[in-house]
Image (cartoon, rainbow, N blue to C red; front, top):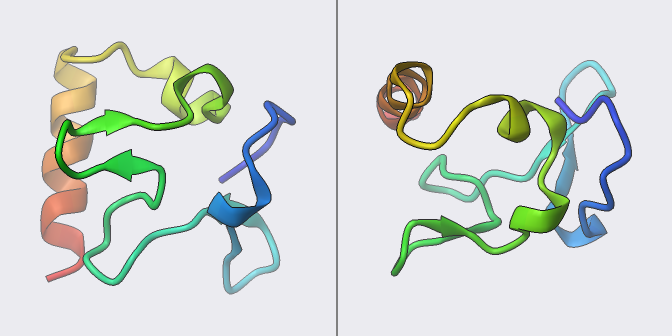
Length: 73
């Protein structure tokens, strides 16, 4: 959920079922800002707060990625 203004481009923002702004997810469930070839964020400098709170490669980050990978099956 986008709770602070970090400058995320509008094309990457969606609205959830409760009217909150969230990052847009594509049909495969992954974030629309993720480059599938490099697995890197294309808006890293403007990423939302939730993404800033997870240190890349930290156990919390890995657990979140694993959860997302299976959530949309």
